[in-house]
Image 1 (tube, helix red, strand yellow):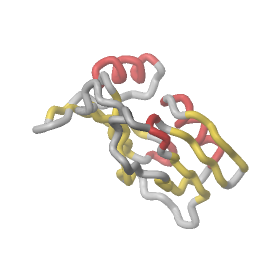
Image 2: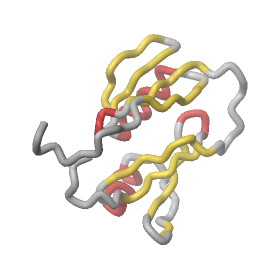
Image 3: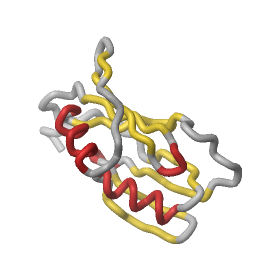
Length: 125
């Protein structure tokens, strides 16, 4: 594609171990991911840009408030926090760093998920 302004590489797959794949997949769909494939022990969800979140059954217990090995980036962190609060996700207060603003929510297995602001602007991702 001659006019494709996206970077030539992307992250293809990110994995997360959970105790209940169907419950975790429903949670991530409610955050805005798209279901691609699911079995009782395995699930593939799609994010913007084509990255896939792969859920698999955890072999070991997951300590409460374990930080998820990724964050989720949104265009409007204020609107997303408001939307998640209205949906009952109990988001933290918004914090401001050097580059991003973010908040956290507790996800499946009480993973701590960070929702961060995008700095891509109008660039395609």
